[in-house]
Length: 264
Length: 283
Image (cartoon, rainbow over all chains, first blue to last red):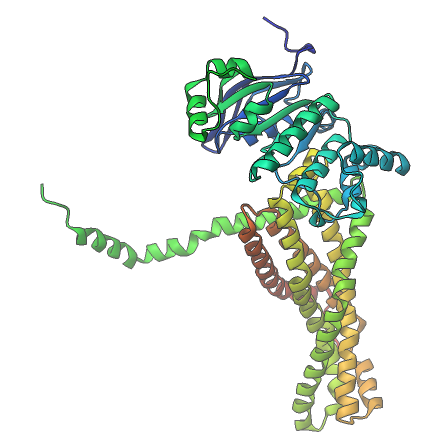
């Protein structure tokens, strides 16, 4: 049997037998999932199938009833708050609607993780923020640094949220339904943003989504969460070649992808 | 088998409704959840208090909240304070004129302001202004996942959001209550001296004779507890919101109502306690 406690070059996160109930409601019923290092891993599933709950477990925000999550070979279940906080630094989270702090301006928002976690000179923090703004094509927006979230457009807010997630140089980026409620053009932009971020910053991306079109465009790996378990996982090619019945139904209803034509 | 008689069910239900135990049960049923709600408020307060002792200390957030609660509320407190003092003076003069003792107006209104009017009215006004603001802000932070975002940076939401509001409210309510006192007395002055031409010397002398520093201390202690109550209720309602924009509005309403009621009930018990602590032997 493979040793899950050792850092693995191809798998960054390995989830085994994760169970979680809220009261009498079983949300996760034994999730087994591997997240590939440096790739875009998309977890798809319908509403209320436990995607968000699974995501929160990854970051240690929720404790499971049973099961293990190994991040680089370290089991994060049952760690102390301090140890969890250390693990959390490997993660950056991009929220559905950015979740920028209303009372802080763009620079303060992006710098927030740095200021909370370390004692860095102000100049260095500002440099890192500006560098990141430039890399995310926000550098040339006039006066963006002093703007408050309410003054930004939806797309800009999303990128500022991404910048805040990236500022502490995470190894893993989590995206919570990044394309929900966007028009098709905006969806394409977000897709490109995720792809580019994965390539430019060499991060492992974990995306939870129910947007099939977007998933088949950008995913390297796809896993389907259904009724609290992973019913199918594999590379995009594998998944498309032999789709699980639930996935097939999901795709056919959304009417976006035709099976058979292999991944382009 | 014949079909069940539809009226028999209703009849049985009616019989149940007529039973006295049914009403007793109905009356007692909400009690456990009310106790649980109270307990949750106390727990939130306790957690906020425990973060007061542990670093990081967020002085800037406390000062921001002090500005919001205190400085921002000055105009409204001064306006309400002036008219409260003036109106109470008018009524007092009316009553005192029965005995030709209008010169007692400063004493009477002064004591009322110090012990009751200033702390309670301040608490109610600040609840309407700052308490509702806190509940709305926290509730919208909650539904837009800003509270979740805090936890992903290992920042405790209670420590970051609740503790500064609690500290600021506990300190600023006594201060505002004192402002209310001063402005209220100006209202008394305008009505009694300028409008009714009562002798200033006598009003002042009787005021100094009758109003004790203890009256002010009691008022300020009450304001301190009202501040804690307001911040706790407002933050609790804000952070326990679930759902969408409509819920934010409901949370705000609940925060204002629960604080106002709690303040008035708490007022009664605080008076009872302080009557024991500071026996009122003035007159």
